[in-house]
Length: 259
Image (cartoon, rainbow, N blue to C red):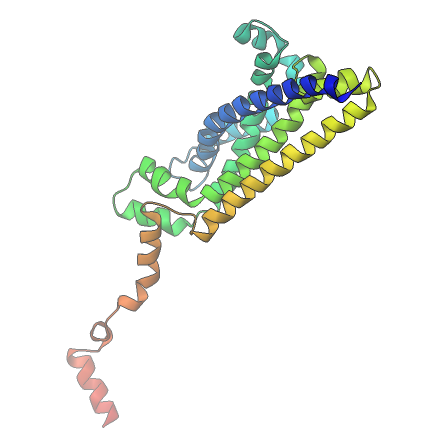
């Protein structure tokens, strides 16, 4: 197969892969972010402590994560047909891709949010902030660098999932590698596909790492969180000597001891 024959196939395959991964990532973030926050908030000592709800949600997430993606695609075929009207093509592949990525991203969100300093949460609560204020002003802004890294990991995983989806007619680079590289013995096309996937993943990983490092250098916070940290750090220095000085009878007794 010549390059002029490969080029249109590869161009369409790249677009199909980006289309599937883009929409799946968006759905995974929209669904996984609140799910991960819920796992943190309902845990023991959380702002919405509910052990039963936490266990139920946690088990659902664990079961969804334990299914291999190829099995998940087959298990969701009827659901996919109900949503999209078909079980093949890039639109149909988005359904299992998104459902498989939501619990994966939710666990990454949970890990990222648990790293937030509990003192900042207590400071917002002491100022009268409710749960939504804590989430919006502290938990999400403080964990934003880690959340970006988690999103990057999810995108990379989805690219791998999309390649597997190509085995059942989803299209994309995985479909090209299977149909032409494996079934028709076009080894050169298969290796070009592998190289494209490697380059795309490297670029996405670089962009995600760059964004996360940039936020770390800036402190990774926004809104009220840095102000609370500043107040917290300066609190011991704000104590005046007069506040610690002995007064009244205690001061007189101390003077007598010195005499």
